[in-house]
Image (tube, one colour):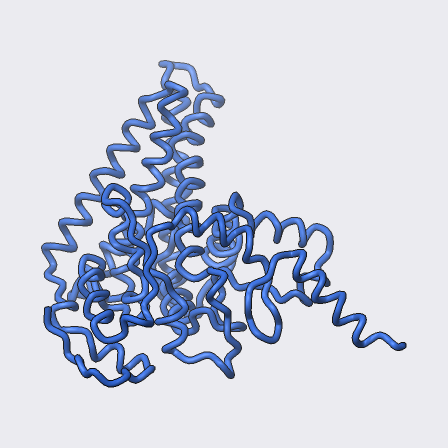
Length: 364
């Protein structure tokens, strides 16, 4: 393996220095590879849609819904890499394949890229910057109303990851908000048109199974099992994936004064090694730190990139293989952060901290 910087001295802790360790081969992205992965993922997505349309056996549907969420995730990652200019050199291939690949997850290509590329990657785990899974401080949480506290407790629990992503990221960031780009408005129109048209067709043909008689109940059931539940499943896959990438009890969020690009991209991301079946659909996305070091590395080269970075920055690379154990541990431990240190606290620790502060400032 070619390594550009193999000095034995302590490596410089700058993002530019880390990027210098990456070889030219790590960025190679022949079009046939990207097209091949796209066709493969499109095939599995089409297959699960056909199966969901024709299967009503109650004990098979949960497996098909799980499978559908995985296939939507795999296509989304294709679109994700297109938006990062990682998968194709040709801008037309990037746009059209990325656009199509993101439609099953109901994401507008340029609308999504605006928030993800500029904000999430530009300000990873920076307080007041990164908007994805942005934590509240103990003081902020103490001032929430009852309903807002209930929603926070659900969203930050092990069971709330999917609905957090669906409401806080997809609904607010993809549907209600429009990025200040002409392309974002156009792509949002394409996405919403696809959502209404595909849902309407599924409802209509699902309710027209009996010749000459339209059954609205049958149409609604077909919409639920083919469109709605797979979309919810996808949101859970996405929410949990983003969560484990950046939320961990040992990763404090920094203020803009203390944050650096090196800290955000190298120390604010964790690499997880998952089983081959899961990785078949998730395209190495859990090898996440190299992707944050340089967005233009295609997903099929992320393992190579990790090896090159480790050769120089091994002590700073976080690797784990306990993704689900870490998720449940973090969702029980990481609730709010200390306003001064950015370290994670439980609700009980946060309440005690706020009470102690109030005692300190109260008159004797």
